Image 1: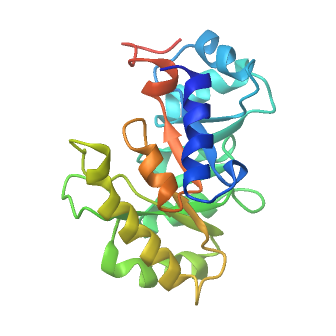
Image 2 (image 1 turned 30 degrees about the horizontal axis):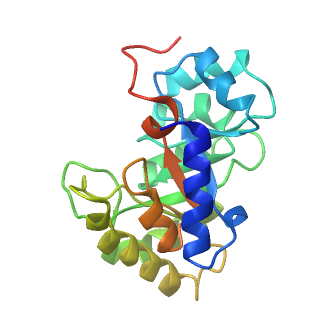
Image 3 (image 1 turned 90 degrees about the vertical axis):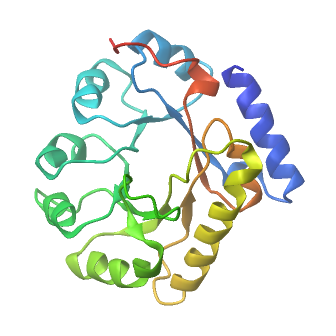
Length: 221
């Protein structure tokens, strides 16, 4: 697949779901990719890129155009927040109080966050338990965080349809909590193998790496 093909499939998936393609932000996940790789997608008009390692983001961002909107899509250690906070437009992986406190440190308001939800209840994955999203949002908001939505990484699917039940679950959780937390509207879900299913289930952000850039490289530039 290529960037152009991914964008064509996004448009088609949105149309099938009766949604505007403009309602879906495609985050081109560029982990391990070089600046040249990123620029090749940037030059096709793309502006939203995602990284999952603080050090790699810090190394790449200064050498790339300033109008890129960076998303941090991986688990973040509290001691790395200063590096990420100064660069990104959105943190996708808020899930614990210690990270929230670290994210709030610094001058001015920090970038908005998404609450990561472990919808698959997988012990090896980060995220708030599905049944605790409401209480987690309360402490996040009380701490001063601007929470604009929810994010999930479901279990690895054997087929794209396998992810639907998890995307449906996150959508239902979003709909439930938005009554008391009206800022929680975004749904970051869906990756290279299942983003079309995610769009059908109301994803507003999809995170696509391999389908755009090809296989990961051993190291980035």
